[in-house]
Image 1 (cartoon, one colour):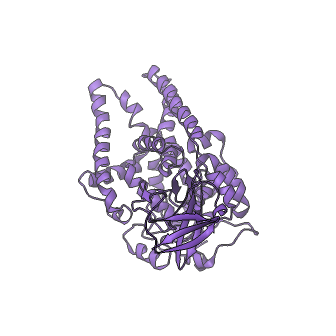
Image 2 (spheres, chains in turn orange, red):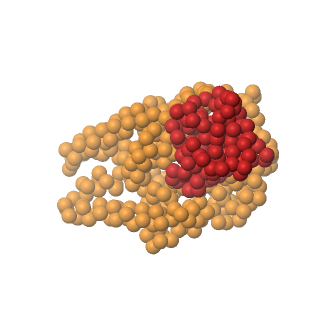
Image 3 (cartoon, helix red, strand yellow):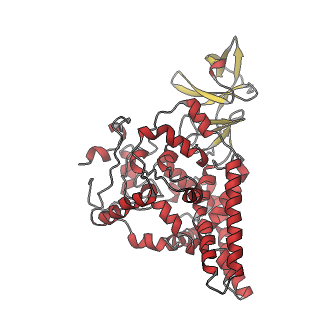
Length: 362
Length: 109
């Protein structure tokens, strides 16, 4: 579906920012599927058990694969071990970062915060900056000029996506942000979502993170081997490809500026291994619509609201059969997007809440 | 329970209209409030909207003495109104509550 052909300005301080506000898209009311309060309370219920189990498996699998990599270091036999270690470190960290950032993974706050900080280091994200960035992402999901986490602006930067399979774009973005924050300044646009009271913490964290990252090459030089970096630092690059693989399914190719997560997010059925690595974020419509539901309850939430949502993608391959052609087409036609079909009996989008994007569509 | 002096007491709801460890919304005179029932069967009242982005807290989750906002998971201690950290930075206003004849009354200033 085509709305406009002109590339848009995705910055948070450009003309789209004011335009989004004028169109009533900022901090707007979003569609929510009807769900009984008692059922929702049950779904929202917190528990430490599932996240403790999954964190033990996560760190345990990293320890075992890392041990194999260390044992076979110097031979090709180390490659599969580091591949597994890299994916656990450089990709699975993204969903841990995400769930613990929402503080829904564990019931106990400090457990969320400890895993959040560890995952931030792994995923190359500053904790406080990204907590606020993600808060804005949930307020204004895929609203151009407001959402700082639109992963695939149109026209899509295909080369950038490929580079990010190896963490390159993420690393460049981190270095750029750190260069501001260690000097006690915000990157332009960040002032729109990071409150004044949180900024000293941003600068402190940036300085600590910069020192921690710099310690890795120092450690390698001290021991005369790249091996320490294979365990800390480099996995954020050589293991990042699955994070991109999962992450693109969330919103890529779908509509912008529409106040209904059923139209700008995907729910994709995934196998148990993927769901462990991704902590059920494949139920992305459900997560955005009800972000207080912990990851382990998302399959139940999906069952409760699926009749009011577009048909889920049966597997990741099916999602990519849509995403890849969509992104290639958006290279030529930036205004084109995949229109998600709501079931006939689903509650329709409130035209008054559409912000104009749907109304203007052909 | 809050002990602030109230200018007027307003009937908000029946005491048994709120489940234990839950919250309901109460609108009055153009204002919106959240009325809580704690696991210890005490009642509390706060402003109804999150101080972060004005979302109704009555749609959120009560955990012990904490209310979690349904939109961004910001947390407050509803017994004191204290914000418990990002993304909520501003405390909630609390109101005195008393239960009489099976009704929950909140004291408004």
